[in-house]
Length: 391
Image (cartoon, rainbow, N blue to C red):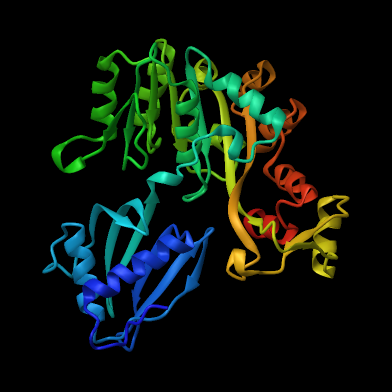
């Protein structure tokens, strides 16, 4: 427990205890939120879900926030403007990269600390949760000599980890791999990683033009944010480069529609786009305490409405191993759309979403929901967790 109400504890001690506890629990983020009574609410994000911890009393709150800002080289005098910083610390015998973001609120400054554990970077494709058939198709796409491949999903769905895993798989002395990121989250040996710095004029657009003069074989762009970035990425793929990037959409089919909405000409999409991977992260059942349970009446109605015949459902009951949550770790749900000749014919005709989705399914695309159901059948994931993330 964090002994934050003891007068003999300094802000340095409190921050140290918070960081140590978060690392030991496997938290991905720490939230420090000012409340109306000026106490600082502390929450850890564990496996994608926030959990309350012991609050920090109002006597210590300002000093704790200042201590975190000092660690990340932020200006402690600026309290009315957002700031971003970073640092690296050794916590619980691990090297942890910290990304700090402050945000002024009516009750004070809110601080969010992203924890990146260098020792636990899961960059093995086989560990991400791909079904075997989808994994083989994905491997074939990332080993092409050229093309444009996109990974889609909301913030925190594991897109960057998937792309880093793909780069690690194809990385070799014969290839020059260059990335353009904001920010660089993992360090990859043998890969030239560039970090965006808009204040000095190093934007995605200017960075891409310079990057292509670096004689790359493989290019990874952190995110396709606008038409200009998309066009440069497509042009790079058409001139013999393999280009990876991410985009924020709900599913794989929506990526094609998004490119069309950006004003990318259909013939350019057909000439460059080789595939789209949509993904989500769901919490895994704790293997130590999971047990089979019956479906609730609400779940039975959902299954009926979806036309699913599912008889198996495992749920973690909570134990010491999973901190009484019933969950331990996360796994990916994946939907891989490959660009077939039939899809190219549709794209030329400015199609509707339903037309592309139907054709993709006819081509054998496994949907996100189908990926989730496969994991429910295996007992890796509960049906309620799939519903929480997808429905």
